[in-house]
Length: 203
Ligand code: ATP
Image (cartoon, rainbow, N blue to C red; front, side):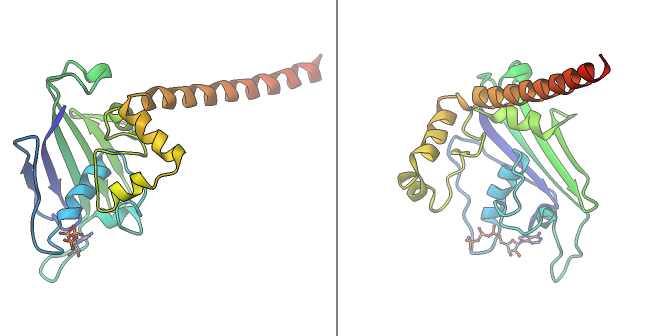
């Protein structure tokens, strides 16, 4: 699995449709202060399901939409698409057979949000699930190494370090499934309790 292109439109400072092609395993983004280097990283986080405005260096989720400049009016919608070469089948599940996978997220100012995998609408959860265990998944998301990340890792509490190791070992996907299943079992037990109460009332 390799990220081959990042397509942005209306996202933060990238108001014009822009495609960044990553042609090798190592890519560098260089430019003067404030030119939008970190916005590219924010775009990757955003499209892979980041739901915290703070993590995206904003106050509200719509802060990712281009909000105007001296020469341009604000726009109404932001979109980001990531293209992955998946010829190794690392992005798995129902998508394992696809040699290329496109993940897209769009947000409009009226709050309408959409995710798509290879053009088909899906839930945020489907995108998050797809990346769990790949390094781009979960809260540890160690594939994105920012300023201070190495220090944070060295100084991490054992439980936070464990999360990173679990993501690297591909365990986080199964832990997430277990958490969901446990929640479903808990709900079912609660429903059963309610049902038993009703039965004892009517008999
Ligand atoms: P540095 O080298 O200082 O870390 P950088 O190249 O990483 O800078 P970014 O932080 O990615 O720069 O980009 C900052 C620029 O993005 C600022 O000019 C800011 O005004 C612009 N920007 C951020 N959000 C939006 C938005 N929603 N609409 C328009 N411009 C935005």
